[in-house]
Length: 156
Image (cartoon, rainbow, N blue to C red; front, side):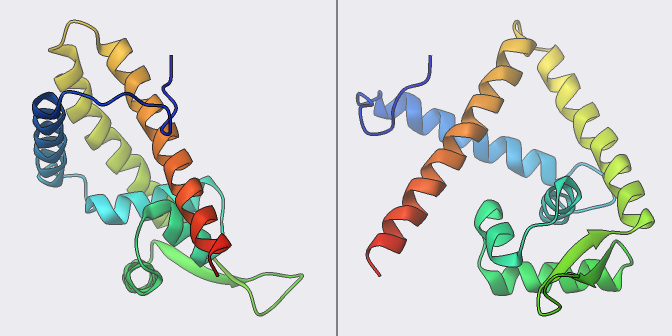
């Protein structure tokens, strides 16, 4: 069962620190996976492929500053993985869209990253539970980001 962020009881600090180190180690290990894309490029392409959002919302979802997103997107456009398209209803709005090459790059990266993680999870006693836990962590991150942005907007 999910714990409410506001009502959460304090966790054991040493265990939480160990978990943080494991997450950092996982991320660093994933950076070494030969996926054809960096983890940052992969995240951007996956989110854009899931449905084009405006860059401000996309940057928020990626937890990066808008200039960082713009720089990454520019590189992905130059590489032929993305293209910019004006929105028909409002030509001032430009959406990023995956090209065929971008879709293929995502498929290859999906295979590489899921293959790597699949091997790691297979070495554990409960891979399905861990996958469910990752999904729960993803939802918690979304909730925390929404609450943070709502609080930030209410102070303006």
